[in-house]
Image 1: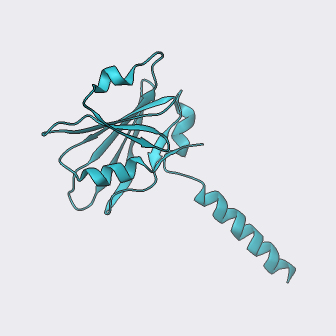
Image 2: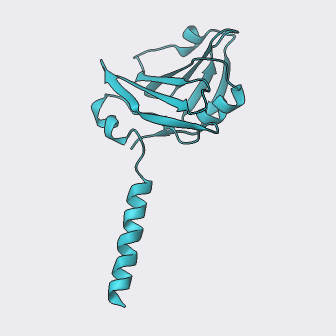
Length: 147
């Protein structure tokens, strides 16, 4: 009986540890800013672990679909000191408050571009082709900070 209890406890602790790990956990210590990733993706999409890279204190990764849907390319960097996001996005940009910060649609008719501004991180999302804005907003609302 004792061995069954020990086995159950070990299983629960292992499950909690595995569930707590995210796809970018190993990269957070390699940059000078908090790292974020989407925990909820549009149907058919996955965060491509082979796409993750760091260059000059910038973090890059992509979210792709096996169904040849548009690719979402993320670039994350430290929020510059005294940065005025409003001057960058312009007065006509659509803003959406999400748990991690403010999400801006800065795209045009031909390009899907978004910015998520958190307290410490600036995240650019470029999309290779048109995608439903509600899917992007859903994803932006699920951005999770790596701890």
